[in-house]
Length: 139
Image (tube, rainbow, N blue to C red):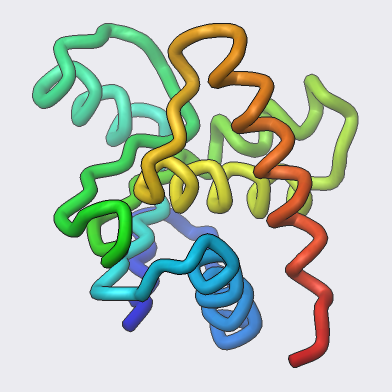
């Protein structure tokens, strides 16, 4: 099950469409979906989580806390809507496109993909692009 929580004025209009897409991402990696919670917040909220739980004193767009394993995807995904908006401007892409990239990034982390070195980053980008194409796939 996928639940969406909003700690800011942002809200996804078509949650069912996003849930179907996330499920397709998980299935495409031969995994199953457990309880997933997407928590949309602001920069300050996510900075506090970054400081308290990861001992990082930096802004970020996403933090994932997996509770499952690579085959049964479950956990909390915190997303700073402010950071996603800023990144969309920086990268000159639509907000929704950047949001989907960040959401897929979180799911990919839960599936075991990393982004700590150049090789992992390259694979992560390839996987993000692959998963973004699933958003408009009819099923």
